[in-house]
Image 1 (cartoon, rainbow, N blue to C red):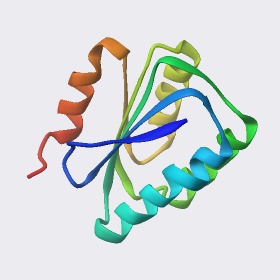
Image 2 (image 1 turned 30 degrees about the horizontal axis):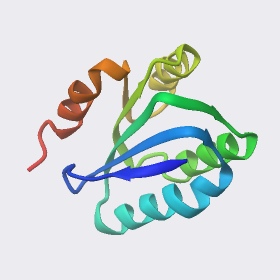
Image 3 (image 1 turned 45 degrees about the vertical axis):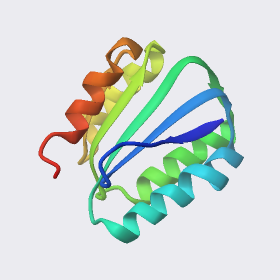
Image 4 (image 1 turned 180 degrees about the vertical axis):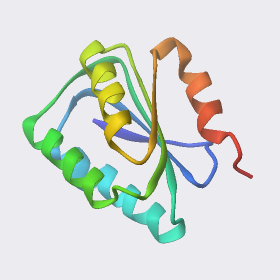
Length: 123
């Protein structure tokens, strides 16, 4: 399940994933939220929180994530991945060298630091 988090600057899309994340979560929640933000802003900042109750992505969700990211490859300015799942943290470190967005990974204990980093320089 993916939920949109409130109380972030307008140019920040903050989401939290719980349990099993599916392709339907991308279709029904994340993709419409991303597209709506890109109608308002040329550049977005993304907070992707995979908390302690996150279990896994389905194959469809992983595919939809890659497709959404490539579709808006140059549209993301900063991405904060907040998780204690080590393989996802390694993936973020690798992606940071290949993608135009600045990507930082944070532990769940540092969710507030991730939020502050994303808000830096925004009105």
